[in-house]
Amino acid sequence: MNEYDGELPTRNLVFNTDLDRLLDLDRDDLGVPEQPGLWHRLRADRRPVAQRGLLCPICRDARPDQPEWMYLSFRRGRRIASHHNPHRRAHTAAQDEQREAYQERYARAAESDGHAVEIGAGTADGRRPAVLVTGADGRRFGFEPQLSYVSAQSVRRRNRLAREDGITAVWHTVDPNAPLIDQVHWVRTDNLPARAIREDRDLLLRGGVRTLRLLKCDRVSPRPCQLRGGARCGRWHPTWAVLVPRIDDFVRRVAGGVYVPVTQRTRNGGPLRFWAPEADRRRFLANGGVLADRTDRPVIPRQRGADHPRVPEQRRAPHRPPHRLLLPGDPYDPVGEPLTSDRVIPPVRREICSAGRIPCGAPGARLYPGGWYCDAHRPGAPG
Image (tube, rainbow, N blue to C red; front, side, top):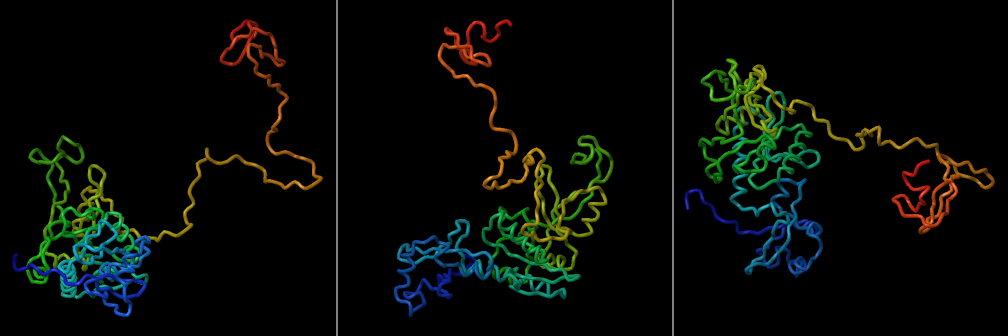
C-alpha cells in the first residue's frame, strides 16, 4: 500500500424507480422498513432487466439521459447489484473521488483565468457535462472525465449531442487503450488517486495534445517527401509532434481559445484527433497541410422527415393510369396489355410431334431440348 490507497465503499446502493428512492442492500430491510419482504419480491421478479426499475445511482446522477439498468444477485452471503451492461464495471468510492477531484481541478484552473464555471450544469433536456466552462467569446466547453469503460459508439453519440447543445466536449481518460481515443477530441493523464489529483502538483497530459514542427525536406531528413514520395523537394513540410502540458494550463488555454480541436486523416484513412494551438493550425494550413475538421461548421439537428432519398431512374415503376373502379353496367376497358393471345399452345404428348401453328401430330417423334419433334420438324432440319 502507498500513501494514496483508499478504503473500499461500505454501502451497496441501487435506485428503485417504482419507489423513487435509493435501496441500501447492506441493510436487512433495504432501508425501506415500510416494505417488508422487498428483497425477496425484487429477487423473484423475472421480467426483462430494463422493466424491473433498478438503476445505477452513480450513472443516473452523472448521465441522466443514459440509464444503466441493474439486476440483483446473492453471492457468498452478500447482496449485490450488478450492471446489466457487460461493459459497465462496478463503481468504487475511489473512482468517484477521482471524478470529483478532476472536476475541482478543472474548475479551479478555469476560474483562475477569469472564466465562468458550472459543475454538473444541466441542459434543457437533462443532458449535462461534468464541468461546463464558458470561455472566450462566450464559447462553452464541457470537460468530461471518463474514468470507466465507454464504447466508441456511445461516446460519439454523446459528443454529437454536446455539439447540438452548443458545447465543445473535452474528453479526458486515464486508459491508454480507451475506445474513445481518436473517436473524439481527447486528452490522457496517468491514473492517479484523488488525493494526488487535488494536490497542487504537476499533472501532465500524456496524450491528446500536439504542436507543429516544420521539417526541411532534404537529404538528411528521416521522413519521405510528402509531395514526391522518395525524392526530396527542399521545402519545409509541417508535421505534428506530441506536446506534454500541465492539465491546468491546458484547461485555461482551451477556455481562452488558444487550443482548438484538430482532425487529420492518417495514411490509412482513419481519423487522428487531438488539441493543438490555433496558431499552429493556421501555420499547418499555410504550409500545405490538409485537415478534416468539421468543428467549425454549424451543426443542424437532423429533423424527422426532412430527408428525401433520390430514387434511381432505372428503379422507378413504369407509369400506369390511375385505377378506376368499375361500376355495374360499365363496359370493360382493360388497362395495359391484354392477357389473352390468339396463339395456340399445343399439348405435349410423348413421341408425338408438336411442331407448327397447328400441331403436326406425327407419331414416332424424338425428344429434343424444345420438345417432341418428328424428322421434318426437328431443330436444324432444312426448309
